[in-house]
Image (cartoon, rainbow, N blue to C red; front, side, top):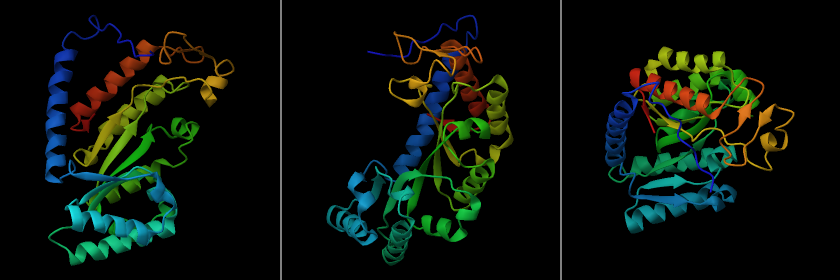
Length: 273
């Protein structure tokens, strides 16, 4: 079984473990409060099949659960939110009308989302989202545009700020997924992420960062198949214990970057998991 081996940090920061334990407890209390206030525990999932359904069919399923079982929170487990935009907008309109007529028992949903360029979005989209959406989960992955583009996340810095400001304006929580230590990420690019967090404290309390386990180089993936030409030296012991001949990246240096990100989030008032 492949598992992440925790580096030894005694000489780096003797108080870090206690600080992180206390901070994680505080973060979890705040997040649990949000979950309880929005009844997210009482949630029904809408599965993969919904991406091919018409808006009316999904709406009828949601209403059935709400009226029959008193379930008002739904999580989309598929790409509906990122798929057919015509059907998605129609669903948003149906939910907005339903919630306007059922103010005592409104339905809310949670799902994945893509930050499109501002020219491909509109205030109308966010206004409709605000009528039924409780939270969105977005794979930003990295705030440095060069790294993000290399990952295949083809949305600009301007798109990130536009959508986060729209979400804050309409009181929609955004879960921001972050990966630190991409295979060719440099110290300068890592520091850009730290500075972004420090600069944009306007979003503290509006977003929750979700950190991954670090970049794993898996077999039969692009990075795995092109490891040699990319200067990546993989390990037979763990998918996470790779090193880079290009920038000197190691598991220990990536863990250090992760700690720096978490500490910067904490110091600037952001919640994270």
